[in-house]
Length: 293
Length: 314
Image (tube, rainbow over all chains, first blue to last red; front, side, top):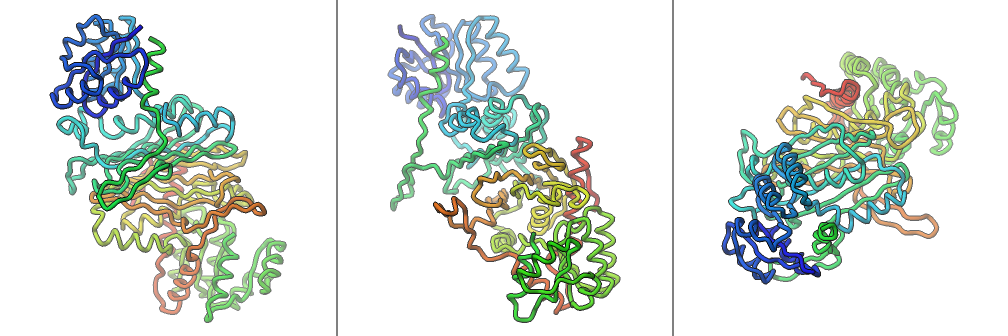
C-alpha cells in the first residue's frame, strides 16, 4: 500500500526530504508547496510530483503525512493546522521557536490522534549511533562528561536570511546546537541546569550573519557537558561545516572529528573541492516515522 | 613533577648550573640527586645561600614558604604554578619579592609555546578583528600523588588546570576575567578532589570564554593531555593545539602513543628567567600574573559552592 506525502517548504531541508522520500519503498510524494516557485518546481521535479499550495495539501484526503520544512517560527501554525486536518507530521528541527508553541503542537497532535516526528537527524548519523552503541556496550564505562562542537560559516540559504533573525530562528543555540542537546539527552538523560553565553553583534562590531555560543550543561545524574555552536567562521573558511565530539567515560573515551573522517577528497585547479564522508543517514530518517505509521 | 625538566633545561645552558636540590621528602631527594648527580641539601637555607636564584617546584601549599625563604635572602625565584593555594599567600609572596627587589617569575610554560607566541602576533595584526569568544581546554590524566591531597595541592583539576589557560588568555586578549561560573565534580575517579570541571568566564573586554580543565584523558589515551584554544573574532577564527607537533607511534613493544617533537616550552621559560635576572627586569610571566590566575581558580571553587557566578574586582 502506498502512503502519500505532502512537503511544505522547499528550501534546503525541503529538498533533502524530497530526495530522501525518493529512496523509500511504498512512499509517494504527492505535492509540494513553497513561497519560492523556483524551489517548489525543483522539489516537484525531484519527487515527480506537482507544485501545490499549503491549503491544497492540507485539504487533500489522499495525503497522510506532511513534511514541514519551513522557517522555525512558522512551524506551530502549520503543524497545528496539519494535525487538525488529521495529517501525521514530520517536522524539521527545532520543533518550534518557543516552548509554549512546542507544548501546544504536541497537545494538538495528541488530541487529533496524529504522530508528530521531529527531525533530530543527528541521532541517525553513523558516527553518533556508533558511539552510542559502543557506550551501551560499556566500552568506556559510564559517560560522565561530554564535549560537542557543531559549526562553520553562516547559513546563507535561508529564505530572506531568516537564520539571522533571532525572533525567527532563535539563533545558533536553538537552530544548530539543538542537535547536540537532543543527542546528549539520549545518552545522559535530562538536563538539570545550563549556563550559556552567545554573541551575535557587539556595540563596537555590529554585524549581520554572525552567531556564536557556548553552553555548559549539568545533567540530573551529575554528569557535565560543553556544547559549542558556531555560525561565525568566515565564508572563505576551507572547512564550511564541522562537527566533533568527545565522550568521557569512567573507563575510557570516544572522540570524533568530521574534518578527519573523509573517505574521499578531491583537489583540482578549480576552486571546487568536493569531498565525501561515509554518511548515509539521509534516507534512514523518515523510515522510523513511516514504520510507526 | 616538572622539577626534572627544569634541571635538564638549566644544565643545557652554558651560563647556568644547578647548585643542588632540596626536598623535604628524603626519598625523592635521593632519587633526583642520583639521577642528575647533583647534591641534595639537608637544609633549604643552605641551598639558598649557595645559589643566585631558586626554582620552587614543591607541593603547591609550600610554595609560599620556600619562595619567601629565598626572597628574604635576596634570591630570585621561579615558582611552579599555581603561585599558591590561597590569595593571602600569593599576595604575601608578591610583597616579599618587591621588598627584596628580586625577580619573581611564574612557571607558565605554555605562554612560551611557539603557537601561543605566534597567536599573539596574529591577534595584534588585527586580522581576526575583535575576539568575541574563546573555548579552551587543558585536559590531562589524573596525576595522583599529592595532587589529589587538597591540603598540599589546594584542590583538584580546577586548581591544577585553570591557571595555564587563564594566563594565556589574559595575555593574548590583554583583558581581565571579571566573572566566573563553574561546574565541577568527582566524576571519574574515587579520589578526594574533583577530577572534572567546566568554567564559563566573562572578560573585561566583553568577550566570554569557556575552559575545560578536566583530568579526563584516560590511561588508554596516547598522550598526557592537551592545551587547545578556539578563538572566534569578528573577522575570523584561530585554533591552537599547543602540543600537537606529534608523531603517532604504533609499537608492538611499547604500544600506541604520540611522541611530541615540538620545541620544549620549558627551555624558553628558563631562558626568560635567566634573562630577567641578568637584565633586572620583570619577566614575561610575573608573580602578579600568578596571582590573577589563582584568583580565577579560587573564584571557580566559590562559584561551584554557591551555584552562582562570582565577580572579580580589578
